[in-house]
Image 1 (spheres, rainbow, N blue to C red):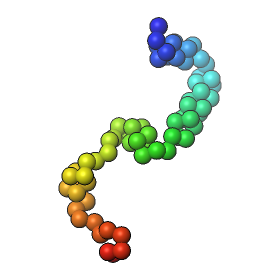
Image 2: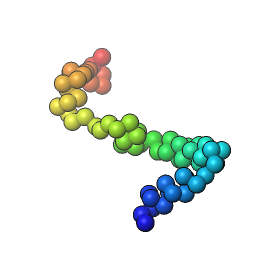
Image 3: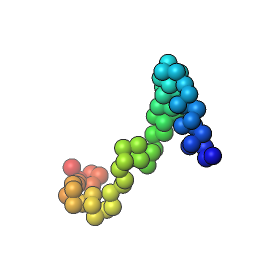
Length: 66
């Protein structure tokens, strides 16, 4: 049995109060990951390529230009 299946089995055996406490711990742990890649992954997103960025936002002013 893989780790994910084992975790699901254990969570299924918890009471509702235990599930809520576990959820708080897990969410707190995930929220500590503040890198751009972690935030994007949590929301099912990915970084834009330079071309996609340009297509969406146009030519933005550079430092000292605006």
